[in-house]
Length: 264
Image (cartoon, rainbow, N blue to C red; front, side, top):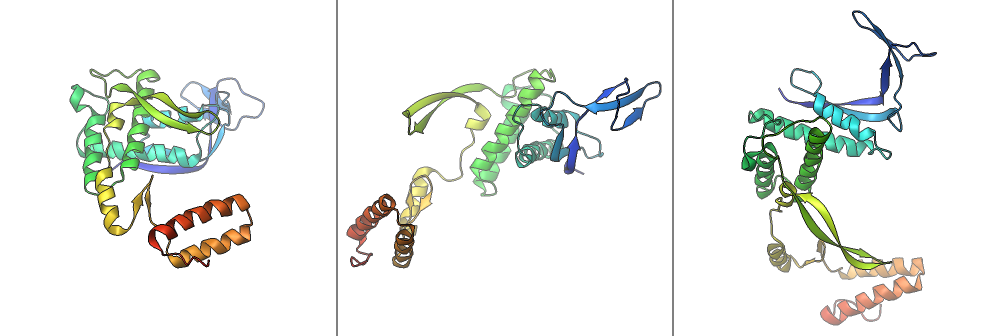
């Protein structure tokens, strides 16, 4: 038995009230009080398509997780359904890991052995076995840290030790209007600890044998037939600046490898 995710095709958010409105959507009768429904005012859009719900193995609602997904809808710019489903998947995978290993995700008795750190080590093992991409693991950990932030600040969940440690990181941002500049952002140590399975140096080593280069990704030079297709497309595009840029690149490749016919 495991935690499962279900999708509600069109999810409506209502606020319960004991005062009967002019046109209630539905009503619920409690032992002593009858409740009516009105549209929730805290949500920018009270209807959401393909809303994910997480069910525990006994088919009951996972309250903390589902409350967090609802909380995400309260923002002025709520996430797209695919983004919300991705967040729900991260929480579901984490929840099933905790169930399989008998871990209480709400208890942190030691700093070095928090549920998030144990799960991070689990993801790192999957990366090393080529079962998971490093970027996917980082995304999972980012979603889970945000979930835990919600537990701490909105649900007032207390932990004996912090589940993670915040730290500052500096990133280089390139902006055509402002030039390059360094921005300081807050991140978590459990996210920063995620590493890919193969180092950049090793990728460069592999690429040498495969005829590829590393420049933000694995690239390779165009062969002769592909160059002809590119030149044909440039002629049809009829964009002088673009043609000039590509011809400079092709000329440089011709000079290095003599693979391009100069008459083209």
